[in-house]
Length: 196
Image (tube, rainbow, N blue to C red; front, top):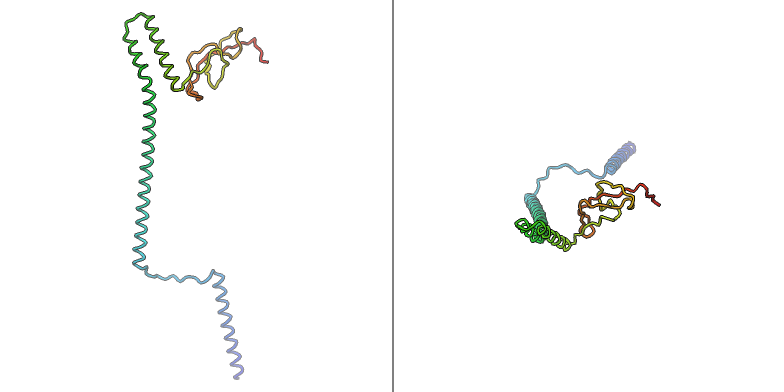
């Protein structure tokens, strides 16, 4: 009887050991021990420290946003001042030309004298443009180039090559290599010419 009781006790212990092992295996497969949800009170000092850090970060963000906005406004103001300065430098060079036009309008000379005065003013204006590196687009006698010329029409002629510019209606200009406006021209149409 004693043996039987000992045998039953061993089986019971083995069964308990198996239950504990199964329980450990199921805990391991679930990713380790699960934290117990407990309502631990937050330390007041920690709370105040985190709150102060948050307030500092919010303040720093607000300052950075204000600095960025000020820098953007300053850059825009500087760009506008530069444009005004550049425009002022150009206008300043044309003021003497305008003065001469006003003097020509006030003059009481003959039509020939007035024409001679206007021709001098045109030369003065061309000189100002030349100083700013603005040049006229070559037109009459040149081959038509759609990048620099705008055709207003064609003129049928047999004595000139096809697509040659025969008349300039409005002068075109470029500053250095950049086109400001194309020249308005009339182009030769020579139906007898064959392109080789």
